[in-house]
Length: 409
Length: 190
Image 1 (cartoon, rainbow over the protein chains, first blue to last red):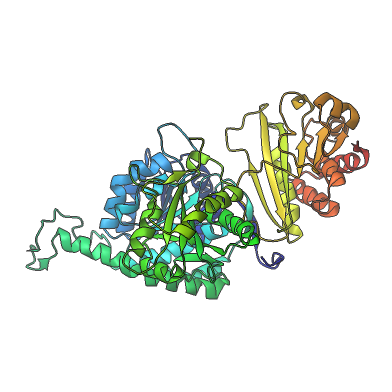
Image 2: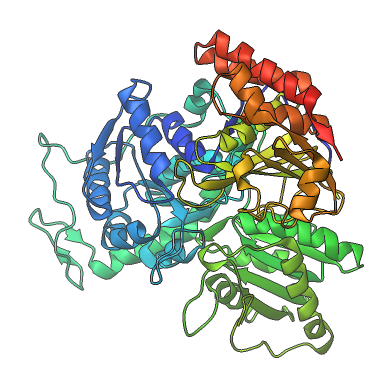
C-alpha cells in the first residue's frame, strides 16, 4: 500500500456511509424521494428530507407509511418520468419484495440504497447481507460498496446504468460498519456530476395527453392488442428482462470507465482484484469484508502463501465470464459469505461454483459463513480460515458439501 | 504493516465522546491522514456509559472490524472507574488517559492495572473552571495528545476553534482551547 497523502485540493468531506448515499442522490438531482425510516438507514432519509426542506434539492419528498408504499410511489413517479430514489434495510426491503418485482418487470430505472442489516428472527439491527441477497431474483442490478467513497460514487453511476438499460439498481452497503462510520470522501462538484449524468429522458412516460396502458394482464402467449399490434406474451417480456441484465455488464463497465475519466476513480470492472496475478489461493468476499480480507492477505503473504482477494462489486448481473479469467490460476478458492441460503450454502459461493463448472478450472472451493447479525470479523480470522483450508490445496477435492461457520458452534 | 493508531473513548451519553472522536478525525483530515470515526453500535442515551472509536493512519484504512485492542483508551468520566472495564484489550505498550483527581499511581492500584502507560488529569475540574460545564471532551483531547501525539496539537486546537466558531460561539471556542491547553500541561504520567 502506497503512503499517499489525501489531496487537500479535492473537496474531501468527513462522511458516514448514510450521508455519502444521501449526497450521491442529491448530486444525481433526484426528483422524487419516497422512503420510510428504518435502522440503520434512517439518516439517509433524514438528510434527504433536510436537503429538500432547506431548498438545496429541488425534489418531492414523499413521506409514506411503509416500505411497500415507498416503492409503490417510486414506481408511479418513475412512470411519469421522474428520477426517483429510495433507501431501506432488512425488514423494510423484505416488505418491499413484491414491489421490487413490479419495478424491475416494468423496467423502471429506480435506484435504491440498501443499508445491509440482518433479518429477524431473532431481532437484530446489525450488519449482514441476508436482506439484499434474499432479493437477488427480483431482476434488480446489485452493486456492493467496500467503503463510503464507493457508496457515493456508486449511487451516481447507478442512475447512469439504470437509465441506459432500464433496469433498477440497488446500491448495497454494510450497516453500521459503513453506514455509521465516518471516513474521508472526495465529493465531486455538482457541475462535474451534471456533465457525467444528464437529466433523465425516459423513452416513454405516462401522460394524460397521450394515454397508455402499463402492466396489463399479459397472457402466456403473444397476442394482438386493441390496435391490432402483436404484443409479447409474459415469457417474452421476462426474457427481455434477463437479456437486459445480461447485456448490462458492458454498460456497468463502460459507465465505470467514464466515471473514472471524469473523477479519477475508475470502476471499469465487475469485481476488484487484489494481488491475484500470482495467487494460487483466492479469497472471495463482498462489501467491507473484502477490504478486511486484503489485510489477511498481508499476513498470509508474509508466511509465503500466494494469496489474493477477489472482491465482488456487482452481484447481479453475476460476472461469470469475467470471473473465469480472473480465477483461471486459482487452485483453492475460499469464499466468505455474510449470508446463507438455508439448507444449501452462502449465495456467493454457489455463484462461484456455478461460474466455474465446466470451465476446466481445477480449484477446490471452501465456504465460510461469517459476520451474521453484526458478528465482528477480523483479518486474523479470515487468515485462520484460509490456513485451515490449506490441506485442500494439497489434497485437492472434493468440496465440502455444506459451509463451515466461524462462530461458537 | 501500515502505520495506524486505534483509540477507544469511554464516556457517558452527553459528554461528547463521539464529538471528541470526530474532532480528531477532522484534524487527521487536515493533516492529509486517513481515518475512521465511529460510535458503538447501539442506542445512545443521556447518562449511559458509551464508547466511541477513532482510527488514524498514514495510508487508506482497510480494517473494518471492531477495535478490540486499542493503542489508546481515553476515559472522559471518573464515575466509570470500577464500573466499566476500560482497560480491556489495551495493548501492552498502550496508553490509558483518565479523567480523575487520582494520581496515576493511585489509579493503577485502584484498578489493579500494571501494564501500559497511565496518565491522569482532573478534567472535570478544568472543564468546570474554563467552560463552566462538565463536558470534558476537548479537555481530554488535550490530555491524550500529551500522552501520544496522534495528530498535531496545533491542528486539533484549530479544529476545535473552527467547530465552535461556526456554531457562532467565539467565547466557547476560547474556553475549550484553554481547557485543552490546561489539560495538556496538567496531565501526569505514572
